[in-house]
Image 1 (tube, rainbow over the protein chains, first blue to last red):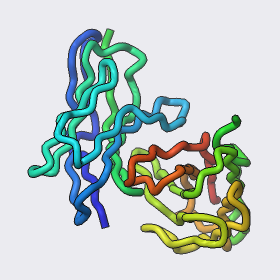
Image 2 (image 1 turned 60 degrees about the vertical axis):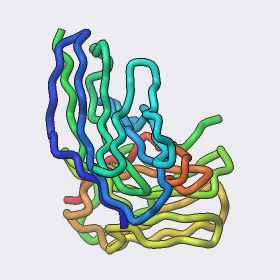
Image 3 (image 1 turned 90 degrees about the vertical axis):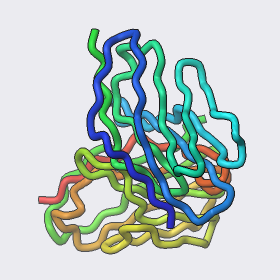
Length: 108
Length: 115
């Protein structure tokens, strides 16, 4: 079964700065997708970005991008130009497996 | 489209009571999932279903049962509630399996407290 590990329980960033959230995973599959979800205080889970392991190009969605290192089984999320609305729990996820989450605080 | 809806939003149970958490999706998704999220933790898979009539256990199935009689509905049954089942429960759905391209769409969650 796939495993997903997030080793940063909490991170903080100054508004307008850049922050990187880390995630490592393990899987026996040759092709798979990885996801980052955001959970604001409302509890609603929202997809931030997805990456197909088969693609070498890192996924980008506006201010959000990933650094996917397949050999190292690393899948980090970079948030550029951080905004107050980015404050939330962020979960790395694979196939029905979620990491423990990173709580991101954005300081004004 | 309403997406994924869950009822109730909140519930307090006494030890030993039973209840059913309802989940409905209107996106014609094949896959549906139940997760629990303990305070400060990630989501753990309880059960999932690949289509009507087909269900399978996840990481933490003990104390729960599910059924999938229609594409739309995927209720989660708690029998003999225990304090360890105090958690927030999320239902989710996806067209394809979650590890195969499709994102999961989540309901708003049910906060359950067992006293």
